[in-house]
Amino acid sequence: MANNKSKKTGLVIGIAVAVLAIALVVALVIVPSANYSAAEKMLAAEDYDGAIAAFTALGNYKDAAARAEDAAARQLEGKYARETIAAGWNHTVALRADGTVAAAGENGDGQCDVSGWTDIVAVSCGERHTVGLKADGTVVAAGSNSDGQCDVSDWTDIVAISCGRSFTVGLKADGTVVCVGNNAYRQSGVSAWSGIVAIQCGDDHVLGLKEDGTVVALGDKSGGRCDVSEWSGIVSLAAGSTHSIGLKADGTVVAAGSNDKGQCGVSDWTDIVSVSCGTGYTVGLKADGTVVAAGKLDYEQGDCTNWSGIVAVSCRKHHTLGLKADGTLIALGRNKEGQCDVSGWTDIQLPIR
Image 1 (cartoon, rainbow, N blue to C red):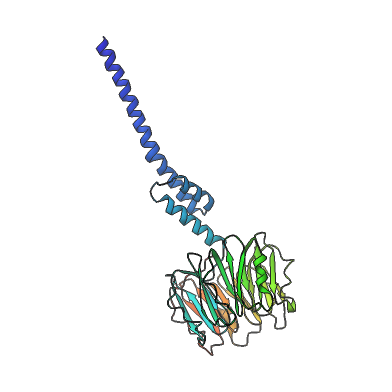
Image 2 (tube, one colour):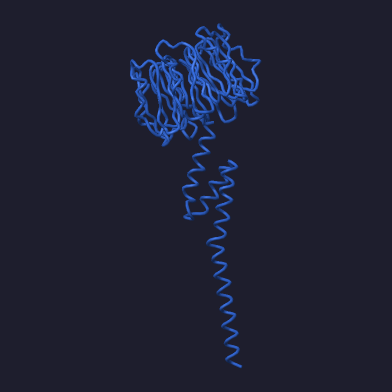
């Protein structure tokens, strides 16, 4: 009798141990696996906050830490627009899918000396300089440094860049802004800005998009180019030599500044997803991949209205760039310095928006 009781007790203990073992397996394998799958689904659905929290909670499980970093990077890319093609005054640069950069056009000051750049995620051009944002939040520059516009080597935590004529502006991850270069119009005052999510430079003025969809401006105010304080519902910006453009969430466009060449004649535009400004003209990319233009189009850059299948546009002085969905680049306009010689370029990074 005692022996049978001992056997039953042992059996019960054995079953309990087995149950605990199974529970431990569930806790250590099945539950984390399910949570990992749930985190992946959040990431796929672009629920970045949820994915970051879920992956972080998994600790050392599989590659959860790396996936949390990936989710954070994707969240950053989604928040800040990053230009992958850029038109300068007389040169053109474009970001390749592998993080290197192609350049064409005037190179008298070394503004096209970008062939050694790597790990680039965004590009911007000034009059005679080029700036690249690296994946680690640092910045590189090439070209004229006559006003210190290339003094960006100590910048960190940068998420977006934009170049003026001879100055450079950087947006930091905390929503503040840094500026180097020519300060004739007190552009460096942008250092007092906060809560900024996008920046765009004209020749001598700077626009900043705030989290609430309103816009601030500094720099040369002549012609009303900085009269943007009444704008609201803005999601994207563009700045030309004498005018400013704001893209609204509903796909319509607002303008401020000189309209002497019709560059601000955009009030009837609809279904716009991206805007860019040249000297005396404005270009808009429509949701269907076609392009509209307004203003002085005296170098045939206005022929971009015949384009289709476009996913990004950029213009600055007198030439217009269009990036196609297959990663090729097309250009129209003034080509005196070869800035439109891009027909052989391939594998250009599609816009990060």
